[in-house]
Image 1 (cartoon, helix red, strand yellow):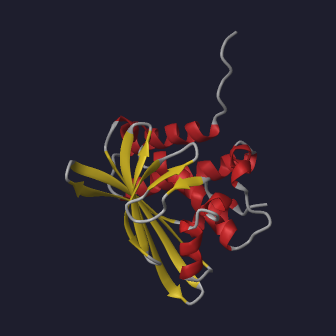
Image 2 (cartoon, rainbow, N blue to C red; image 1 turned 45 degrees about the vertical axis):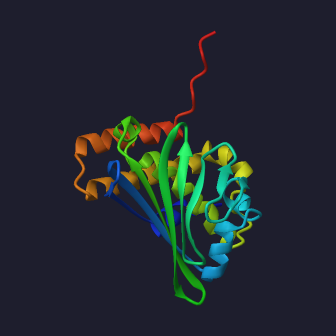
Length: 215
């Protein structure tokens, strides 16, 4: 059984902004320290044979300038690579383009801080769901990476993730993640009424089962 509260509390979340060529963008940053050397964390995040063990199957050319595709999810181009410290890529999904930057910091020989920043322009999706729109998904990814790096026999295999997300434990994890992103949003000075409504919509999107269509 996963210690949901411990995992949620082990993660740091931050919401911010950044100026891009096309205008102001919002940033969602998530980080966690793992009991693993930086080379192992880098390998887990870049080896196409290991990525599916904690995240999603990936195909493509995983090197600078190459294109990648995550099965059933985003694809993009690798724009920066500095092993074993950092990489950056476009994140192209549903006709929209955003960006991710992954940074690894060795805190000791056997401890590594993983940090991911997701950068996106403000659009209707952000207005409706706020930072939790991408933040909750990244919380799930960090949970998967934690189990993989620890070789935890109770870790959720990616093929079981959808079923787990619908369980009581999974819904609690999604709810706590959404609330944590709400708190991070408020910490930036976001309007409380909007932030509350956006977080509620995010929680519902991740936890409320779809209703059957009328026959």
